[in-house]
Length: 598
Image (cartoon, rainbow, N blue to C red; front, side):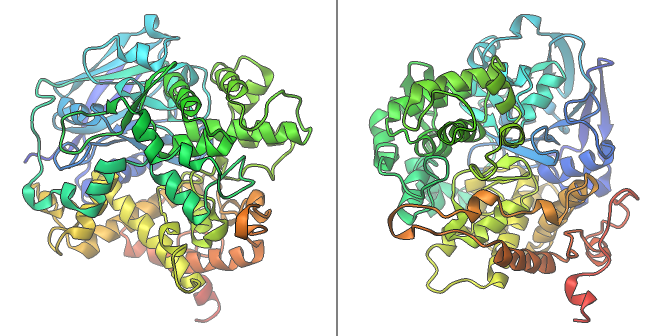
């Protein structure tokens, strides 16, 4: 099994393509995917770089196991976020990642800088890249763009072209998206409409062994049965479902949006005939769509809409325009609440899907003053109109999926996420809400850190989230987390070493954010979560800022960061990051316990 060890560097301003060797020490310490991209981004960008300037870097990165193990292949998109100003990594699947890995040959990814003078497409084949004109594609939707090519394609829609700060990079006609944080806007700022991968062996059987067939695990069976659309059923059952703009924690219409309703509406599965079926395919007046868990939550419960057909239309619209449907749904919810409170003048109400649909189109096109403001994010809208307490955000990114007012550990996961509020970095809520006894601050901090480190490692491999977690939990000491395949390519490690890689990568992204000026003040508990939630027996629940501050300190202590959230020199030495840090990055000297003589 060959190991890719090169990178394609593409400068769109100069229209040049170069192949370069990845430093061996970088491969050893960061492997690929998130880790290697974090190392490159820290090295490439000067502090304060405008995310939408030509100088920003946009990386399309595979991992050494992309396309080689069971489960849907993934690739990562890494850049500096135009929504948050933080490090940003997004992941997506479908047909594109496996084809990209094959087309790149002995390269792990491509690093794109500069900005083309006119719209272009990058075509990857046989380990090389060509830059081609794409002027005729500018203005086209995601499905229209993908239909223009015979090979797997990753592209932006109108939202990316208009630099909406939560625009996505989509593939498979809009079935899959590198969604959160606005990587699509960075792609649009570079006048890059699409990346096309041409690989002659695409579609042939690849990788995987019976010893690590995750389809037989509980996670694999759950994914085949429901994908992530069952998330709304779980969230509603345990009372963490953000409803009507984060005012309530459960939704009476959840059953109409849940797994059973979706099964009844589905016309098939995304990948028919395969051992592990993909998501449910739904036909709507906006075209076919593959709804995920966030679709019913953000565009359904979040907007008070219990008509699944209407929710599917909104989801298909976001997919077509290239909008992150989580941020788009929260932007519409903010508008509904702001109109109720008289902060803005807009004829829009909860449960009414037509005005929501119109507003989504205005946001993607920036075709109205309100749509233009919301295209820059909820924080931009609150800065102009007020209403900071309406929709929770962290570092400029609005919260997704789970309301953490019943799970302080989930609030901590949102606050400390390296890309702004994210439920994929750690999901301790899945355990905490069922705990027999209340968790201590130490238990909460440990749970969040453990998940953040593990996922950071798995995202270096860029494997399917579900497959990766199943392999880790079901493997032996020598086989955890795909280690069997890592040994085959000469990168096998012990379990302890693999987790240290995850910790190193998490620390690397923290160093990037600290250098950008982020500190403890940004790892905040949103004002909206300090307001009581209403509904059923949890009426009045909220999180307290003072207790959250103690929890955050416990997290910093276990991370070996100082009280301002800066990694300490001792931690950098332990993780072999001493020679990485530049003089512009503030470093913590001691943890709180050391300052107090502990």
